[in-house]
Image (cartoon, rainbow, N blue to C red; front, side):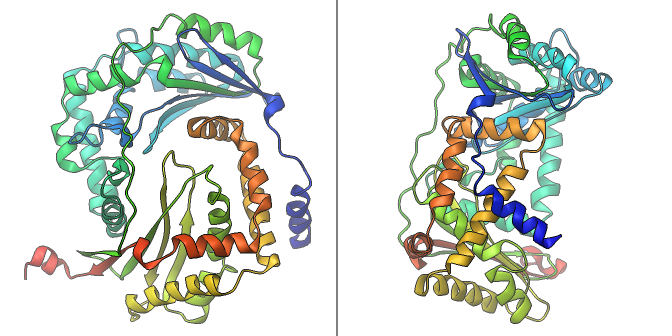
Length: 442
């Protein structure tokens, strides 16, 4: 079995990964771009609509408004009442959901391919006709506030992540959590949500991706009929263009919170795709952290037994430069300072001695296999096309694998030296405290 996997992954290096032939691109007169990926292997299809707005585009003092608006998109239009959208999709054997990120908000449904017209009709309706019932706004605001409490304020490691991100960025709006700060969520009113909706939810600020057992000649007329008459937004869409200045000294933040074990996060500012260094950074993170044979796990978890887990994480798929993050949970009775030092030791090893050709090739194989195998469904094929379109253009998908294949050991060492420096890092440490001492109370 292991031999089979090795041969399969190795063979991927010689299979040109191309999507150009399978993606058909159209643009309506109102600015709405449509990408159609025909795949007739199974009688299902996925519809996705991407809006080019996320938490980085929010006005200061109203963080979380993009995510709250996502909730409101399920609360009814003049034609379809609250929760009717999802009920219709489910009654037709489909599934639906949505998510908000720092860069975009995306809504999706997967249905039998002969019913994809439902998605077209329903999404066109809620692009312009949301009700924003005051009671629903109040209810969903409370839901989001509770979600924030459960996912972040009651989760020590998520709380530390928020602290580190907010500390690492002093100017760029990536410092804001997607879910928003609690005081901001509380302050969002109906009129502000409606204004935000009318500004950003328009055909000229969105694109559609449809993947599956469909024919472009059949589905495109449906899109034109339902979306074609929606006018572009008349409001001025203000996109945040703040650039994060170079960090010139280490930042440290400590979070005292009820927790079982100490936890550390170390973040370094790095560029995002398609910057020329993003590919070597991707390979570096794989060498350090992909599986139990990776450097961090072998050294810090298995050999030294300093931590229960240790990881390095890099995602270059952000519109603007983001972070290369290291982390780990100290093992019982072990000091978090020793975990921190062990992570720095592994970073210095890469700087002093280039990774071997074998390590580099293994990492590239892993990245490529993961990238290709991840696109094994109508949803994921649409998602990847949409993600690269959001980053600039769906055709960049081929550039990603092409550039990953070119990465050399000296490239990996170079980016480690360039970005993983003392002055470029932000360190966050979770300090466990007894419940009675949280907030300084005895």
